[in-house]
Image 1 (cartoon, one colour):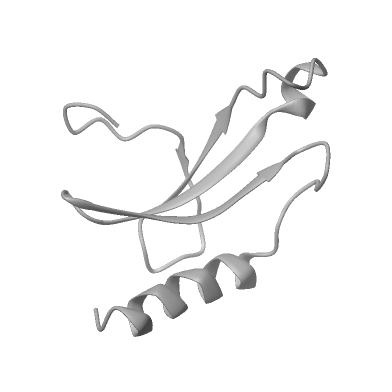
Image 2 (cartoon, one colour):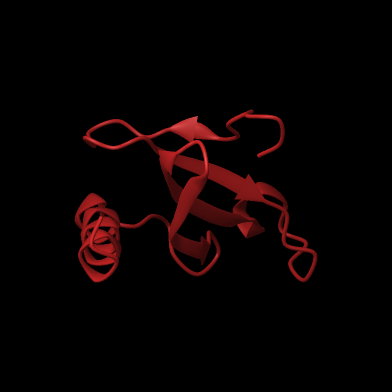
Length: 80
């Protein structure tokens, strides 16, 4: 993110602003299927929470419940 720009696509089905962005993996030359997937939650304009990061070549996708669990655990641990 820079200058308030949100990158990636917003994921549907969440009560939070959760986004997925694809990031190049220079160690893997498989094109789009070798990229990393970064899932993050925009809590406020000053707080972005990394939920999950995974390689598409290792994992096709992750379950929404895992994303939800990551957010809930962070919020509880930080009293937010």
